[in-house]
Amino acid sequence: MARTSADSVLSLLDQRLVAALQWDGRLTAERAADVLALGPATVRRRLQALGADGTVRVVVSPVARPRNGGSAGALFLRIRVLRGKLDTIVAALAAREDIPFIDVTTSGDEIFAVARTEPGSRDPLVFRQLPSTQAVTSVESATILHVFRLTSEWRHQVLTAPERAALRPAEPVPEATASGSPGPYGVETDALEQDLIDALTVDARLSAAALAARTGHAESTVRRRLAQLVAQGRLITQVLVEPRRLGLPIEAKLLLHVAPDHLAAAGQALADHPSVHGAFATSGPSNLHAAAYFPDLTALYGFLSRDLVGLGITHVETAIVSHAAKRTPAPVQPVQPVPSVPSVPSVPSR
Image (cartoon, rainbow, N blue to C red; front, top):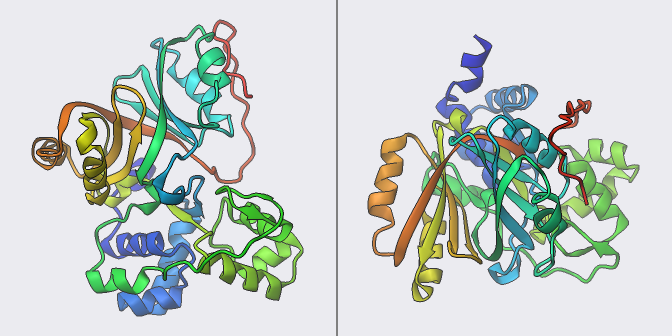
């Protein structure tokens, strides 16, 4: 019974609330009720229920769009492992802070992951740690060269055009020069802002009062800085929800070969497609990577056979995801030790 509930598709009302949160992660129940023409009490009750059981979480996005779509400072990793050792390698990778995303494919011996790194660096994970791990049979890496679409920018298509327009945030105001250390998106930040970002990382819907209590700053100061972050477009949120709950049980990874003179147009076409939640130009033979959600395999076939036609794509490799093993940040909970397997060395952290 519990499994059926966990895999069941959300009601249209709940799906519409999820879509509204994708536009504004800190959307109030009153504002949502006004835009979606619902009763405030109903919205408040459903938002509380969705958050209480972990169905929906709103977090600070671990990745933000680089300026002008440039390099995101990350690698795509495709890791093949010995059958029977998949869970061990996934657990070791998931324990690393520099790996925010891990997907396991239906092949049973393949992992797709994203690793944060310095562009052009000789990353120890790729050059030393993974190759020396006995359970790993091969490692392919591709550097992200240009971002067309991030997962945090994907929107579930259940809202009307007027509703989307009402929820769409205003254009960011120019950022004032700040002093301090680089924040999560490479922008200089001070101690107050960093305290707020740290507190919001695993729950971006914390109230100003709760943030003030957690950080020790005055509530009026917290409200003022939050408003500034939102106005500058520096508080990027992401809604974490199992796509199956949205009626989208099929996730596909697409590795595409595109002629150079078609790369920009093909990448933008993918970014504009409602099914695509990630699109990136990369190094390597597959110079365009994409990820997309579909309601069924028929829709995936239609995407491959119709929607990719005319984009200059010369080769397509499709991998279907069996489950998402990690979506950073994880909820706060007691850390459970991962059983060690003596014959398979773990993947050490940097």
